[in-house]
Length: 311
Image 1 (cartoon, rainbow, N blue to C red):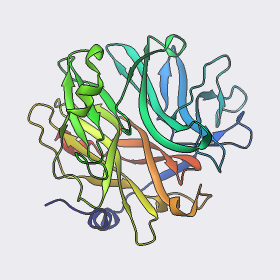
Image 2: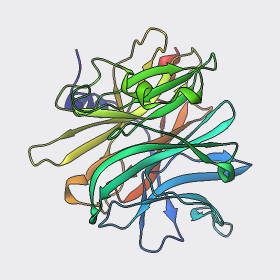
Image 3: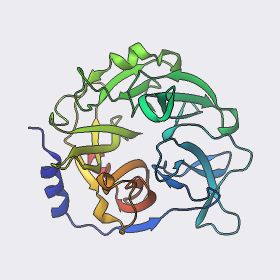
Image 4: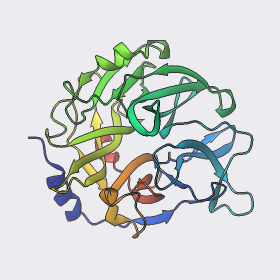
């Protein structure tokens, strides 16, 4: 039976874990907030995070590539002479050695640039950050599209349909042979992973990891509204067998209360964390990067949530 986020929260709170929390500190962006970041990744022997950069009272954002400050490694600064992108909620992965980067483009009214009427996911590819070039666009109003190279070198595609097919937001999955097959038709026709969310709630994939047994470990979010129409977002994981489409139950791995009190973009976003990426470590631990309350970015060290799926 599909569990609600409240039931999953109760399970989460029954498991006590040692957590180590650290805030990301950014410079070089003025008074803008940086949130909904990726996990750190390496490109040409340089460590990066990508993050959503915007004013507190706006949702018109840019994505910056940040590197560690040469004077203070606790601080991240925009990489010099590097393109920024007019996107939200960036993501990165590698497919056949290529860097795949993307984010959500918002579409506004012609005569009112502050009124967002639609959105779509844009994809770029290249051997490194400096050679990225556009190659695909997702369907209108679809966020949270993610790619992963499977064990047989095919490409798994995670989608997030809404509306008639997906309600408030489900997760779909398809397999393609090459990046050239990443089309709107493929994304629209992806098979829904049934039974992951109750109809009143929604979720999406934020990052995918190939596990040692060939299954996919999916990092994502599960979300709901309360009676005041305030949003509640939690970081979660589950596993997917790409051959049989069988999934494990969703498991919450982090919540807003795991992080210090801080600002929120709006009152209805106070209880929101958005999974950005996770780094698995050799000691059975993992480092999760998240956006918090649509205003800040943190990393938290937790037990590796994917280990049980490899057992």
